[in-house]
Picture 1 (cartoon, rainbow, N blue to C red):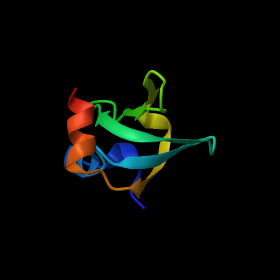
Picture 2 (picture 1 turned 45 degrees about the horizontal axis):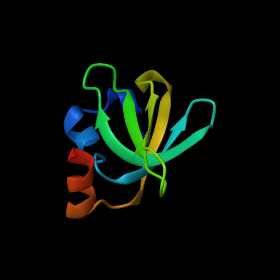
Picture 3 (picture 1 turned 135 degrees about the horizontal axis):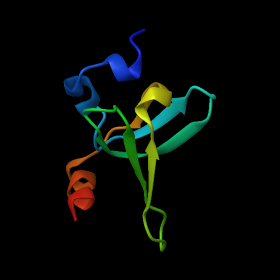
Length: 84
């Protein structure tokens, strides 16, 4: 399997706007909606929104990412919400 940081930006973009589970090299898992991927470092920016709470943002450094899996596909509505 190709390491996350070795993949192309076009492949990373396929995960944007979807709810994902990111696993790092310490086997920690982080879930959230992928907001973007830094094209230089391969770092992942996750956005988590809980009801009646402020959104939280988490950055997982690209060199530490070992796996990314889509949990739920984003919709046009979720894409619109992320642009606001």
